[in-house]
Length: 274
Figure 1 (cartoon, rainbow, N blue to C red):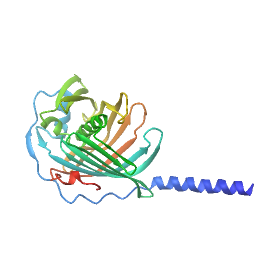
Figure 2: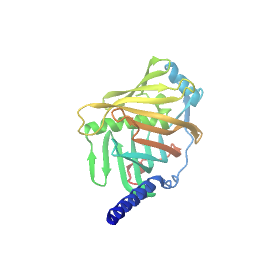
Figure 3: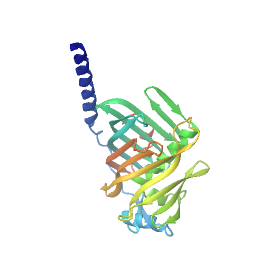
Figure 4: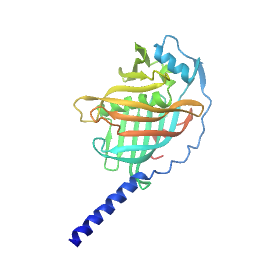
């Protein structure tokens, strides 16, 4: 009996330690060494669907900035595995060449220390997803998902590109929704975009995305803006959640704590690490 109670006690201690490790947030990455450069400003395009025009007037007024690059730094949680897994704290730095490619660097942490490091690149329309236990590179279905991620993140963190990039187009749906079409190679991908009826701000985006390289069919993928805040003089979605429809709850929540715009990321976006 004493041995049994001892084993129960040991198990409880390990469970408690595991839980405590998940409650400790990692320190943020150090600030990006460059600061934002002043963007070119151009008139807001005409003939946008009504909820889209309302959104951009809320953000910028009559004129919108031309963003060429962005570096986002922050923290969040990621559920591993995404279906039925444990939500781990983490920190991230995402680098964008606006509308062209990105580098995602993520550290999943326990007790504030890195447990898993992720380097993901989407450059020249090709993806490379690097984990400690393997690499997935330039798989067509992963490329499709990476391209959708590029544009969904753009909508939240550098939204002006969706009206300054001539390859992007909007179509009306109703008073609170619009269809967004973004380039993908020689074709297009479609987002259903929904706007908040009270604030006019972007609320959510939905698209059909392959879950992984071996997926036989696409799954509805939802990106939700949970909070908007002015950072570096621009109103952006500082908190966002990502959900696969067949899982029901967000597998990732990202909170942006710092962002810089229009800096030179030509070499930095190809690097590994933060």
